[in-house]
Length: 313
Ligand code: SAM
Image: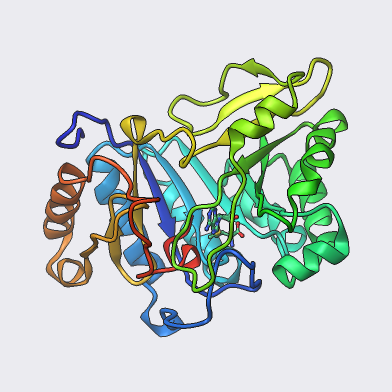
């Protein structure tokens, strides 16, 4: 369906938990998490997705927190896959446990995967995230092996922390059939403000990056490639080149809250509708989609109600 500004909403980002295995420096504080017991059940998540599908959603990304932490993840993915209108099911993960779970996810019907990897240096990776880079690389290998493709790497560049690795990340696409996407840091939910990198500066510094057509309609990145390299470089630039006018997404969080715009704090609680049944759920989602705000407020106000790890990115 279309929102009040005529945008067709076809993409649901479904956060299934706020719990996470990592502590990325720009993503989360430890306060205010939705406890495991308050997370929607697999059946409820699938029910909400079904209602979204009836309203025109055909693409779902499962996210978190860290989605691989949910014990019923396979059930969730298979349930979403079984909804006939849903044509694309993907997942965003920190990949710490991906090597163990990739095959099961593929069998359950997952199409593809995005992996967060903010440094190619094991020590820096650990400092930035508290995680293990080797596990990410093993997860990438396994995901390729089982056919979860195309794989995209998400990297958030923070000034003075990992912005010296842009060339290394671009070089990573030389021999890997993997897209690396630089996501501009969004000032959201953090106590300490970080300073991100302007993606347009990357373009200026690497004129060898040539524009290429996006793999999917409606994706937020502008894509580039160096001639002869296997992978691509995507720039997701909500700050330097906002794309709200083309935004096709809504977000559902693990506690049953809908957010129609990542960069606005207005939210709608679906919980009461979940008790009332399918029609009530669909009506509330329909209203939320219609009232989707025109655009984000990054830069005009600091959004501190929820961290990104609670919203799902
Ligand atoms: N745990 C999973 C992961 O690490 O990919 C999924 C959740 S994470 C919140 C989803 C994405 O949001 C990650 O790629 C992360 O880098 C990105 N992200 C988190 N905080 C961000 C921020 N303040 N600005 C831009 N991207 C952010």
